[in-house]
Length: 513
Image (cartoon, rainbow, N blue to C red; front, top):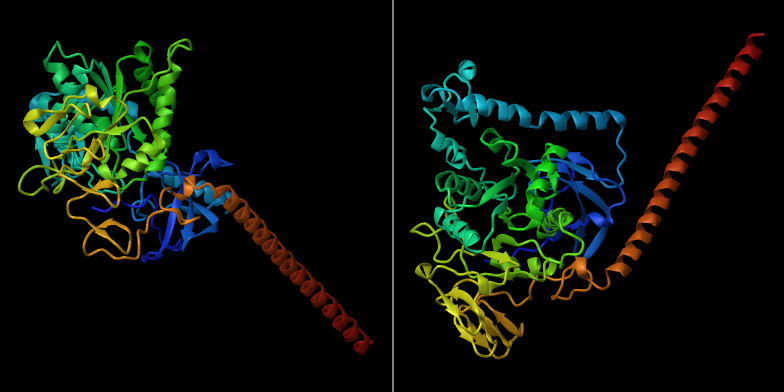
């Protein structure tokens, strides 16, 4: 699977369904923003700049942070666009209408009432994805329901709720139980007492389920997730409605305080953050969000303490390794292959592929992480870490080089190991698939054309920004001049018409006198 570019393909603002061909959009980091971003139903939007055929366009625009498809959230606003008070009020009203029908407090009150009901009255509406109280049954006529909802079912909400499988927005592909057991056992063996689960609802519920049945199990968790449906099943200290693409807590300061208390408990000791973002999401805004969570954790540290890092497990496809390590240089990628229960490709079995491309990126030293031998992993004494059985140590690279679980081959012309299906192309002067196009890779920098970095880290970006800023100013001056000329012309036309009218009136009076 080819590595996707760290850019967003966009459509025209007017909503046409066709793509812009070679056009792409790159996110502008929050530090570059002069004013607060406008809000959509998913919280603060992100600022993008459109790049077409190697040139950055002058106009930047705001779009939804969570939805990469405008069918899911059609917010679009040019950065320099001025909105009327009426339009702003209409947008605020729309954003309010798109929020969950019940507040967080109301959800907790309903949950407490629900668990007090006798088993025969506990009902879940599958169509509305909602726990029903007896006085609400008549509002759901003909809807498929689950009756006699047990306490065990309430503790496994991911089995009651339909997964939201939009890979660009929610991507609710749930961990297989095998993966959850591995993570839970690993966290316990490493001595962690708290797990901040960012977008990992299945892991969160299995941690809580094991804690409720094993008094010796000393691990608790807090779930941050954009799926508000989970608010029906958890108290305030167990779940926060959260958008990981813009660090937005939908329930405001109260939810932020819950997260802060969880991260800073015991002066920040014994906590790990584990996150499984949608694979269609951009790495850049995710990295910004995770650094904000790290900053909250650091607030609870003593100033005289030795500088430490918040332990993190970022679960993402292996072909994002260079992008993730660009933002977190201390991260390394483990060989462990993460499986999903409801994904047709990323799981074991007849319907899945032999190797899952999803890996764990972490700042925990890999020598401390023991991978299960019974699942096909071995310890490499030279690398001092666990690797897959087919990942053989290369004496030339002095490393176990495979990324996808297969045995890679060393290319002496490229001076590195490559996938076994690749061959060295004398035209491209690099290894690639036998049937590849020799036009060269499409990734790289849009500004200078080099392949070893992206536009956001280009050393020439400051020069380009100055040129673009000057172009924007020139365009703005031209636009203002045209507006002034138009206004002046309209004013002159009005004056001329008034004078003609007065002359006609005087002439009429003269003829009639």
